[in-house]
Structures are given as structure tokens and as C-alpha cells.
Image 1 (tube, rainbow, N blue to C red):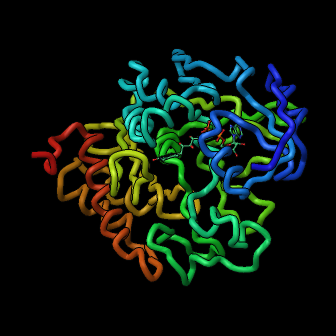
Image 2 (image 1 turned 90 degrees about the vertical axis):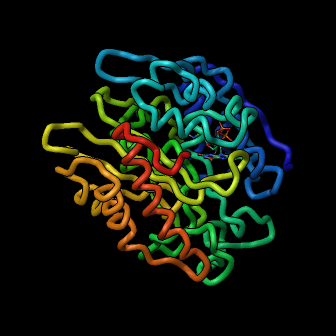
Amino acid sequence: MKNFTYFRPTTPEQAVALLENRWGNTELLAGGTDLHDLQKEYVAQPARVVSLSGVNALAGIRVEEKSVRIGAGAKLADIANHAELKRLFPSLTDAADQIGGPQIRNMGTLGGNLCQRNRCWYFRDEHTNCLLKTGQRCFALDGENKYHAIFSQGHRCVIVNPSTLAPALIALGASAVVQGPNGRRTIELGRFFRAPGANNEREHVLEANDMVVEVTIPRSNLANASYEVRHKQAYDWPLVQAAVSFERGDGGVRNPRVVLGHVAPTPHVAEAAARSITGQAVSEATAGAAGRAAAQDAKPLSQNGYKVKLVEVAVKRALIIAAGQKRYWEV
Ligand SMILES: Cc1cc2nc3c(=O)[nH]c(=O)nc-3n(C[C@H](O)[C@H](O)[C@H](O)COP(=O)(O)OP(=O)(O)OC[C@H]3O[C@@H](n4cnc5c(N)ncnc54)[C@H](O)[C@@H]3O)c2cc1C
């Protein structure tokens, strides 16, 4: 790991003042479960590291009358185990509970989860100069791409966004409160992520001298669930994830949101799936049709066609869970 100068501010304003307006030389450090990995691989080589461990304002989960506010420094384990969050937003707590393993969940934070770098093996290899470093091409496009995007239309880099909290939060209509050099602003999480295509772009729209302070989720009594298809039950990322939310009504599902994870460079909003289930009572037949609709525009790469079927299954099962119906796949 390259040596660096360590800063430990105590307020968000002090932390932001220590950042620079270009990426790479100065990095924020939360739990370090991603940043230190990248440093040890020499993929990240910051000369300055700004630790958030002394910024008490980032901690805590506050359940208020109209919304829930989760500090960017809240640990993943605290989110997963929070009784009121479990009741209101099982999609979020289930997603948090499946991340990594106990060590990762006890160190990793909400802010770090949303801003973590992608897991593409070409990007994470010190010796490969891909598009997201200073290279000219995405090696996964015609290389080893079984874990990469199946909705990558128009993107030069075919990573998948690695956050499993993001699809759940987007489906719940959450927003991030961001501290920048000119004060605070709010960004809907549906607009927070971007598909990077160069070394001066990240997987999100933050500037290099911005930081996430908290995430707010409206309390609107939505049915919600997240379903992940995984190779391994721990210390791995999902192959495909579907997060859903909807209002329950006499006339069936209202205002559904279906958001897919691990299938595109950003969390992927499956509008056709939402249209398909709108006004329907959730059943194996209607949820299955929504799953097929979610997958209809997929354009898999050479090795990841299997993800198309997984999208169909994940959406179907997430809708069945959110509707509180029997999990037919569990015997
Ligand atoms: C084996 C393993 C399995 C995993 N499985 C999953 C999984 O299934 N799903 C999943 O979602 N994740 C998974 N992860 C990733 C894990 O969730 C992240 O590493 C963790 O959430 C990052 O949080 P952190 O606080 O440690 O971030 P750090 O490593 O400290 O930071 C990560 C990045 O976020 C930036 N950052 C941190 N805080 C802020 C902030 N407040 N504002 C702006 N930028 C900030 C940092 O500068 C850095 O670029 C896994 C990790 C491992 C090692």
C-alpha cells in the first residue's frame, strides 16, 4: 500500500474542506472494507485519506413521523438488525443482512456501500489498464464477462453496480443528503448512480469534494421486498437482485417500483415489469409475467445469458414475498 497522510475531522464541513475537486489524490475512508482493498491492490493510491470515524453526526438511525433518516456512517449490521426498519422496510434490512459476512457488516457503512467501487476483475487488477483507469477499452466487453451487465445498451464499460442496498432504497423512494463545499443538497437515489466510462468518473454523480451525510426514506406504508440469487450465501455478491415496492389496494397493485441489481452499470429500473403488475393481484402467474417483462430488453454478453432467467425468477419471487404470500420455492 502506498503511504498516505491521515486526517480525522470531526464535522462533515471539515471533512469536505479536506477533499479536492479531482478524484484520486484524496479519498474518504468510512469502514475501509472497500477502500483498503483497493489500496492494497494499488488500484487506489491516494496520498491523503480523510477518515470519517470521528464525525459523530454521521451515525444513527432516526425513525420520524414522516420519514426515516439513516446516517451515512450507520453500520450495515445496525441497519440489518434495527427492529423498526425490519418492520417498515424488510427489503432494505434483508439486503443489508445478506451483505458479505459479520465482519463486513460490522465495519461497512451505508455511505461506503452506496459509493463503493465496482467488482469488475479487469478494473480490480493492478496491471490491467481498463477504461475506468486511463485505458482505451473495456476488456469485459469481449472478455471474461459472466458477472457483468446484461442491460449495457450504450455503455462503453459493462460493469454492474455492486450495491445491494441501492436497488432496495431506490424502490422505496429514498434520497441522499449530500454535503458539498457550498452546503447541502438532496439527490434522489434514483438519480444518484451513473455508468462511468473514464478514470475521472465514479459509479455515482457525486463530485470529488462531496460526501453523503444521510439517506432519508419516506414512510409511506409500501409493501416491499428484495430477492437475491447468489452462488454463495456469504462473502459474495448476488448474481441478480430484484427489489420491489408497491401500494396495496382493492384494485390490485398500485404504483409499483421494480429495481434490478447486478445487471447494469447502475441499478436498473424495470419499467415494463412495473407496468405489467400494475392493477393486478399478485399471483404466481402475474408475478411471473412481470418477471418476463423485466427481462425483455436484456442484451446479454457472451457469457452471461444465464442472468436473463435469473431476472425473471428474482422479480417473481420479490413480488410474491412483498405480497406476503407463501414462498412456493421453500419446502
Ligand atoms: C467479501 C465481500 C462481500 C460483499 N458482499 C456485498 C454484497 O453482497 N452487497 C453489497 O452491497 N456489498 C457487498 N460488499 C461490499 C461492502 O458492502 C462494502 O465494502 C461496504 O459497504 C463499504 O463500506 P465502507 O464503510 O467499508 O466503505 P469504505 O471502504 O470506507 O469506502 C468505500 C468507498 O466509498 C467512499 N465513501 C465512504 N463513505 C462515504 C460517504 N459518506 N460519502 C461519500 N463517499 C463515501 C470511499 O471514499 C470509498 O471510495 C462485500 C464486500 C466484501 C469484502
